[in-house]
Length: 470
Image 1 (cartoon, rainbow, N blue to C red):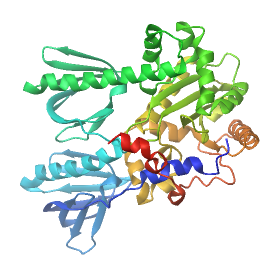
Image 2: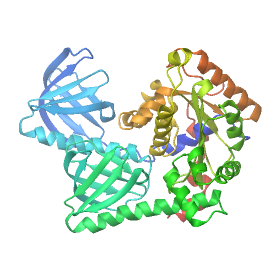
Image 3: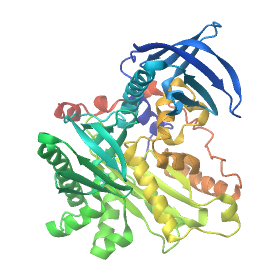
Image 4: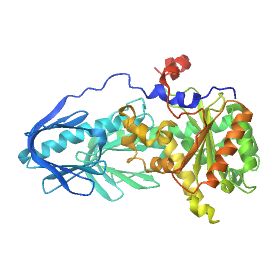
């Protein structure tokens, strides 16, 4: 083990620092009527104002001289009806009306600025740009019209012209089909249809197919690391279960091969997390599932592969998660509540279906935030710090992240084996004795406060990886 207190939090911090100060150019200057609405729906102020939409915020310059500057990241929702624009800010908001012919201009400038911020936040430093196309997009039956689509290393971004962008990770695509010049992407949440691509149809299909093929081959290579004596057909079957970092259940693995699971557990020793895995298994029910995943780090990320596990601890109303870069010692173990504490105290335990939903939510979230943990553990107070607004902004865009933040119990950092075991038991005992679902556990020497000054960036720690990616 041998890591120092706070190593895990430091791992996140410097990689999240912006290398350049964001620009804040004015995109639109107009004039209209503004109204400030309180949390209970009452109108607190109304008047005429100059309104300036900028790259980072919206500036209101009323005739009464009481200016108002609203950072775009503070706006949780934006909607318009009958030429009245409503911006939700905290519990209240601002209404804008009487923009005249510049109503549409406002929306274009607003979405341009907001989506530019969201792109940066959703990508979580994902490198690569594999081109852009235009296509008509239908998402779960909702026609979004002609959208720009930007392709990246592990995902694509769909950018509607008058709505928020959204991200699709290639690893979440179960199947790609082409029918009558339509590309249909099958996801757990529903299908995405792309059409009207013209001469770019073949190019688009090829980009997506190439990405899916790359993920499949990479996953097979990773599975082969864990199961070197298995033949290619068996490896391919295992890779389907563990596609793009998905945590595969012990029962799923054993259904394919009774020999595989002990070898996968052995591989955790290579990754440096077998000791914590073994201890947590002693706290789990004998018939409890365990889940293990492996995922290649993105360019610019930590070197090697991420190896991680999930272990439900029904007797403690918790699920434990640990992830680490291959070849390094474990940094910290994260614990999440399974059921409402009042329900658990009343003797209610979650069923298998609910457990599968929780496991799915955990792994989807962790992958969507590229294995960063800051968005999970930072307090609500910390999220109000402008430095961390990017995390606050994406909370409403990644439902699984909201779920993990709500069910987060605490984390246990690795310093010594005995200390880690003691803290883990203390956290779990705390969890089953508490009745308040919002109560969090924290060790006396873990402030949950990132310390960027002591961070070593991935590029500094693995210069050979950084060079090889260029």
